[in-house]
Image (cartoon, rainbow, N blue to C red; front, side):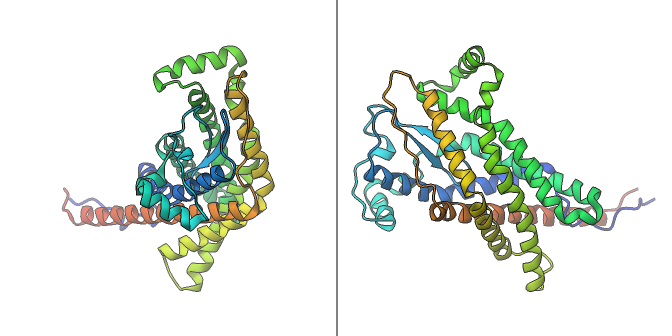
Length: 330
């Protein structure tokens, strides 16, 4: 006797593993597109103000900001390569022509070790939390994205902050990942458990308001654009546009927090360096336009590729369900 099966897979149903795969793919694609912008920005910064011995700078791969410690006495480091650039476009052309196109992704691999897991945790937690909150908040479900975005960001920052601090310390002391255990034990012995979350507060000060505003405005913008274009499902263009606009708005509002957070990051880099070194710290541009140029495309690329991945898995699940329904069972 045939058993009764549900007629279809719920429209929004995809598994957490599929959400993780979609967010991981989005994170890698985002970093591949956005990293060259920051590499060029760093090279232009070095040209104007050469990084002296022991200097720190903030490097962004499109997903996270990382403190990088200049390699003392190493003139072959990617950010110290010789070149004279008259502007951003000129830098792109000359770097590709003289150093090869791969140079545009200099410094990327080490930062992905932190950025990809953080992005996977953040986006997967957001979707799971948002789905639960929408069911429980009833008439107030429109505010579920705001709350889910804030909570998801707190979770990802809490998990990643100690790892990022350890990564910076390892880089400054020229230690390998094999010595990770010794680095952690040394930090715990000298400063205690709380030292691993140094900088957690300033990071939350920027990232939590940004995430809350971003997701709330993104979901609202996506729904409005779908209605405006009479589209049942959001297209790539709709998610890209909604992501860029919501990211731009959130980045402008949280700009003061970004300045505080960036300064704190560089201060933490200083604490990781030897006290006998002559420290000179560099804050890369933290103004309105540079932040907007960096955040808007990163948000647009990340959310549109993530939504594309979820749509792919949703169609896959629906097709799999239909095939299962057609198969006779006893």
